[in-house]
Image 1: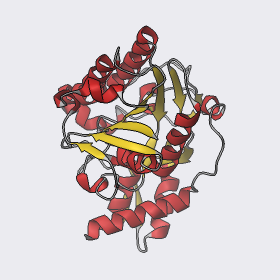
Image 2: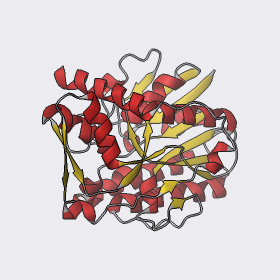
Image 3: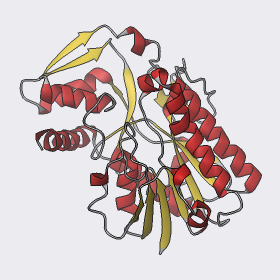
Length: 317
């Protein structure tokens, strides 16, 4: 029986991880449910046997004692609003950097040497690379505030891992979608935004032409992380996550096929988005494939259909 601590565990990805890991151990969740982070009690209300601490990590008393008992710590803290980070950089600094450094400073000297820490980073760390394909050795030159803080957080994990012998895996995650993702507000992601527009307005606006994105269904991501815990040990490692590189227009067409009467419009990319728009490079995930077994991932159409059903249920409730 393992002890698993999930920080930001009431959020989109964290809650899915909590449900998965509750099968093999006792899950403790720390989540302050801050506005904009996606943390909601409803995401974890059906998971049996968890311990939920509704506080921001900086406000948790006895945190050192909590982390000392864990076999696995998964850091899902943060928010994903790129435009929000530009308008409120100090909040992004707190959520995407300071909270992680606070955790790391608590881990030193308190963590079991065999425990594994997983940091959920972002492919936004690469910025607007001009390469056709990027691997873990590609230079990271982020082009927005969030990317800068994500790179800095990963570097803190790397430094603390080397200084204090902490087993760390940092995952660079592409656009993620699926059940438990935010469905209201401005920050609902690329696919979430398309689905909501299709359902509410009957139309999807696609910015520009021939743009591609790397995407992953949340249940595939959860399975990857679950497999990493079973196989990975050692000082700091970073990995690109296996995903699908697909045209943004193709995503829109798939969604429109599932929603009768939905139309697609191609419009000019707004200037504020164009300034932080990444290129269409693919992610090379060869490195991670050497440590976890291959398995069948959800087909893109199937996972999008499941996500559409999730949005329908939420928007109608």
